[in-house]
Length: 247
Ligand code: FPP
Image 1 (cartoon, rainbow, N blue to C red):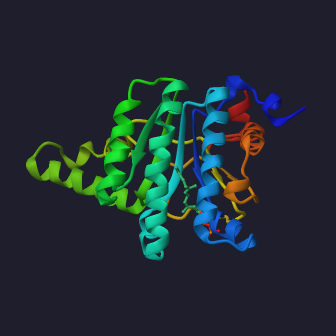
Image 2: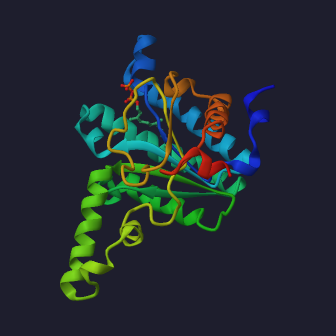
């Protein structure tokens, strides 16, 4: 039985976050430039989005570009940005055909104007799709997101619009980029690295972590389904005891 058939669709994670890692090493192993790895990563993005929509996952968040990635060589950053524009442009029709809404989180204003405009256009063109939401984390850093949330809350307190006693988890959630979706139940990272790299630190408090040894360009639908099967085999206790969960 393949992994897809082993999934219990009644217990699906609603939101799966993915750290797409290993494009550079994938290219290097083939004696090619890092950009070649990113180009080949686009097919894995398409396969993953399709795989998620096929079984009924509601939100997929892909860590496509971190704030720290701006420090990569200019040539690689430029190539990644133009790949993003090209891909978003090319895939909008497929997103609409599959009723997938595009969204983005991160410091979007720091993107190059053509990337930013293309992104906003695709978000607008897909906004009424309701089968699944595909979220791109672009120029995203979790600490940056939290600093912004604290600034907004402090401004409101200064104006007298809220008191310190009003600050709770819900209020903080409302001021994060991710306010429109539930926290991910599952986080997948490819390439064998086992770290979080400044990705959704607040939101993954109770997320199940899954590390896949394959490089991102080799990550296929069955790898995605395998991660979900693994997730479904775990007992999520949220700080309670096993007996409290199962009774
Ligand atoms: C990590 O591999 C990957 C990235 C920083 C970029 C991911 C981008 C894509 C897959 C391109 C298209 C994306 C979309 C959403 C259209 P790495 O470069 O860190 O690899 P390494 O760890 O082996 O060096």
